[in-house]
Amino acid sequence: MVSKKRKIVLLFGGRSAEHEISLLSAASIYNNLDSKKFEIISVYINKKGDWKIVDSPLLSSDKLEAGPFSSFLPWNKSASSQPIDADIYFPVLHGPYGEDGTIQGLLEMADVPYAGASVMDSAVGMDKAMTKIIWEAKNLPVVKYLIVPEKEWRANQEAILSEIKAELPLPRFVKPACLGSSIGISKVKEDSETPAALDEAFRYDRKILVEEGILGRELECSVLGNEEPKASLPGEIMPFREFYDYEDKYIEGKTRFGIPAQLTPSQSEEIQRLSVEAFKAIDCSGMARVDFLMDGKSEKIYLSEINTIPGFTEISMYPKLWEVSGLSFPLLLEKLIELGLDRHREKKKSRENYDS
Image 1 (cartoon, rainbow, N blue to C red):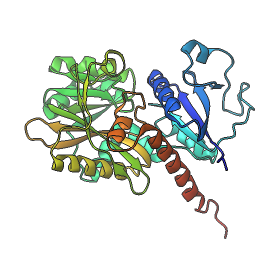
Image 2: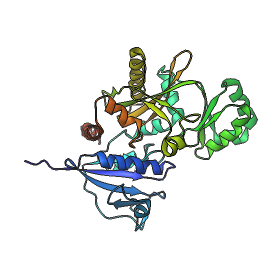
Image 3: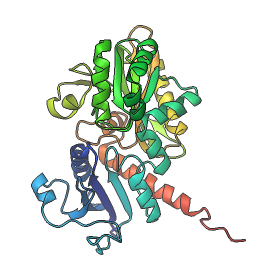
Image 4: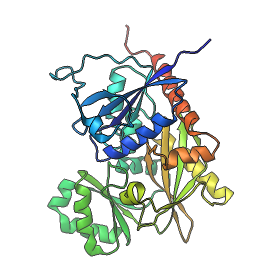
């Protein structure tokens, strides 16, 4: 007896500055989902936030953008009445309006299963400042940092620059609090560079982080699971440029990778332990990639950030680390789908209405 194919809605594109990365990730997922087990419905979201069913994410940008789009909002004149019959949704929307709990909230309201992190863990994981606050409360190791809201920066620039100089030694990193793919990040080597770095970060977010720069190794670990998450072997990024920025990630591609990283057994175990603890601290589910910094002198390990929809391109660390840990890309995708279905089933066991 031939089993029925599961229908997967692949959501990709989106309004964020990481739109193009989403296209690459979606194409990779499309190519690696087992066509004998899954029927893929591809839904492209353009930079305005309008939706359209397309043949696949492998189409050119011109073809993706061609033709009419519709809104998912019922009061919008362009709202689509075309129903989608699916077993589960798979958001591949990096950055704001996709990785921050917004699309997850929409799917929760629709009462449909979806792969990846849920609403709260997506929102917390997207906000690097909030993530660090929670990790600190859980006594997990993070580098020294300051949170700078844009309104305060515009009103008290001299005071904020003085605080940064006093609290954070050089070099330091300045980054938007709620963005990924190294967009808007600057490495500051001189105090005179700080104002420009802050202004650059504020182009993308109203709240930014200024962090102490750790001179050492950049490490990453993939996490998979719901209540009992597991960590992959750690990997290492060896940037070609000053740090692993957008140009090197997606354009130049000259950075080298250690897959797995060359670490002692105790170091690998510690990174895996911290990855799971960081994942559980924000009550994450489904998947995440946890990033670390290791001090070059002391070899102390610091948590950097967590990504609840990590890159799924052919060169992305999340699937590659699972592959070297014994889980192939197609099986990883199947596992993520099963985890999403499991979480939905568990949620449906809870009472949604109060009966007196």
